[in-house]
Image (cartoon, rainbow, N blue to C red; front, side):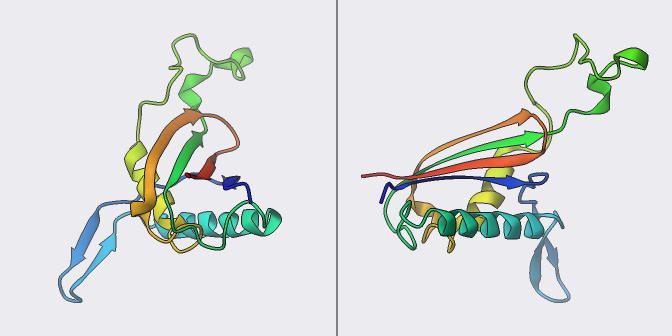
Length: 148
């Protein structure tokens, strides 16, 4: 058992939205309607990764873990030239993604999807590394390591 599992989740990463109350039903609903489908995709990819590498992790990790998330988003069309330069990046295009969605909300949604799938509780995470970048296809690259 190596205690290390890496996998990729294809699709546009989604953040956990704010909670909005519905007073008539006395419930809180997530403001991002795409958060649940993204979380389901993350859980499915995690289970597939475990099935493909059965010796990578115990059934459900209960000890300390380190998690790394890298979220990739397609560049907006405005980052590219026009006409014959349509496939060329403009010199003014930013190198780093500093726009929505917030990286902390991306992490919240994705990490919550791993609870009950790979880890028992998100309180087990003692090291967390996360970033967002431009890249295609849109995806999330996830690495979970069991700490000694």
